[in-house]
Image 1 (cartoon, one colour):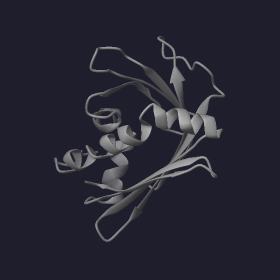
Image 2 (spheres, one colour; image 1 turned 120 degrees about the vertical axis):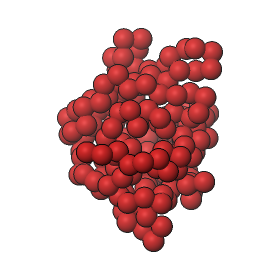
Image 3 (cartoon, helix red, strand yellow; image 1 turned 90 degrees about the vertical axis):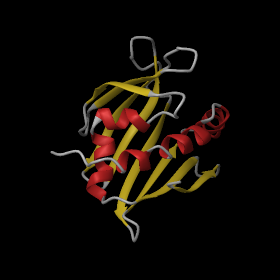
Image 4 (cartoon, one colour; image 1 turned 180 degrees about the horizontal axis):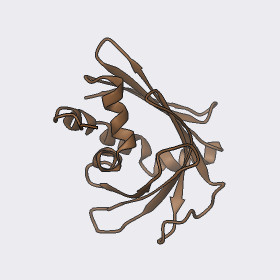
Length: 166
């Protein structure tokens, strides 16, 4: 399992995931910038993601949905606020309506992803910061901690495949 730690910090309104992978930073970065690779792991195994749009640059947006085991398609969106390839990605993450448009642009979490070389290959840290303790609690109740752990657990299998050529 790639997940080293998950930590909820109510005082700082964060939920942090720390992982390590047996791959270099550039290869792990591809898992974020390539929508076909991203959708292979962004959702838990029983809630696969489909990215309809991924404008991978500062100011860009992503539109995606996850397909539930029952066939429902809850939607989400990102507004990418910073990209420092291949080391750091920042984006706002929120819920979307049936057309993929944000339901409430103020009801977002901020996600900061950092990648750094480690003895094993790459350490990836994903820090989600919420606007309130209520929002953090709601996301925990929705299963975000377990879902992200499952989603991150899919990455080793993708990395074990041949690298994507550029």
